[in-house]
Each structure stands twice: as C-alpha cells, then as structure tokens.
Image (tube, rainbow, N blue to C red; front, side):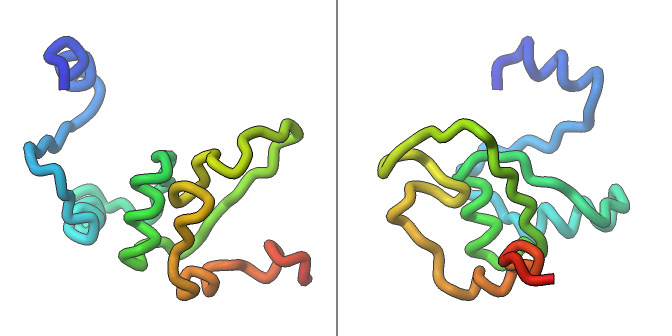
Length: 103
C-alpha cells in the first residue's frame, strides 16, 4: 500500500496489514467478532473476495440489486468471477424464498 494512502487511512481507521497473499478469512471474521464486536458486515468487494467468502461457506445472506441498465456479455465479471466459473451447488441454499419469487 502506498505510504500516502496508508497515512490517510490511519487517521480514520485501524489497519491490519499483512504481506501474505493468502488471507485467513475465517480468522479475520473471528477477529472482527471478538475484538471489534462486529456481528454483521457487508462485503462490497469484487468477485475475488466474494468468491472466496462463498467457497469457504462464510456467507449467510446475499443481497443482489438489479439495475435498469444491461451491461457485460459472456465475459463480463460476475459476483463470484467470470460467468463460466460456477461455484458448487451448496451455495444454492443461500437463496431466500423471496429471491425466487415465492412469498
């Protein structure tokens, strides 16, 4: 992280930095829960973070927004990566009945 960005962020947030390319997401969530009393968080990351959370079973709710402007195509990045890179079907249990049009 560039020093000027780090200095600006340090004035507004507590940073936990690591040189490792692989992050221990369950440990990170545990730390948020224990040290900061976080009970709910929203992941506003891109497809890499979203996919990692989904693959590790760390997501219990998905909130999707449909926008009025179509974009993309076959190679457009999706929530969990490129459209052809589907996750295993275990993720299907995340769908809330309202999301499927059932009330």
